[in-house]
Length: 332
Image 1 (cartoon, helix red, strand yellow):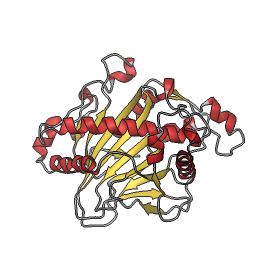
Image 2 (cartoon, rainbow, N blue to C red):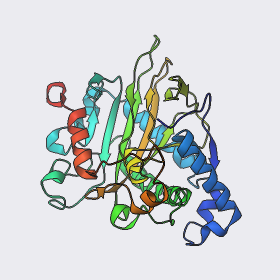
Image 3 (spheres, rainbow, N blue to C red):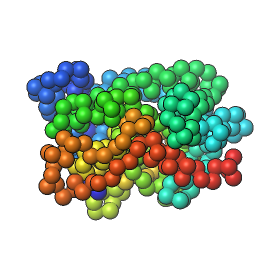
């Protein structure tokens, strides 16, 4: 693991990058170059960072959390109207105890969503996740709100990755085209019940399996923890109006191991209910993910560049989903 930070995550104002995000010569701008340098240090040393100056309004981020709280406050019978099943493409609501991380039961409930795609587009592999996302009728207009939010998160993720591509020494567009020009996405809308005891694991230690994650969490509860090299769990204390951003396993592979995904977990030690909306920006569903030639050439002697893994992203995702929900039928 690449992390050697001790007590806090870096904060990066990406607004200069967003101003120039469609300019292929953006690195000539001093503000962009500064942001790119900060992204490089964060991805090498931590794998996690706060993103501010991202252009998504406080009002929208707050409304997403407020309406999510309203959904999770509903009776189980109401929430189970959109219950997750294999037949529904593993999309929908899962009650507490359904989700497993590394074989251990997590203490949270959630709505799982995936980018929708045409039936048959990804063959037998894609069939597992086929189907429309299931959105609740209550609260009203929740789907419309989340559709807007997803579009903005998709655009933001693409632009952050342009900065990360530059940080690795490539063009802004190394993570587009055949690799991620038609990006898949996953979103988990998660609720962590309040607890009156310590060390209840809301979500067990794991790395994310995609490219980039954007986390929108409640401002008044600290539950997300990131593991450093010393083996200490560092709290990712909420900063109002920010996203917490972290890199995933696919980015580790594409960068030839220069950037490494970092272990993290959730422990809600508060008696208050906590929500978190995690948006996962991915490669193309059918992309063959392996170290990009440009990064193999740039980092041939890096001891962390021992990445030989090749994986089709969609197959990797489906395997993870089916492993996570191995006991789904018994619980629903």
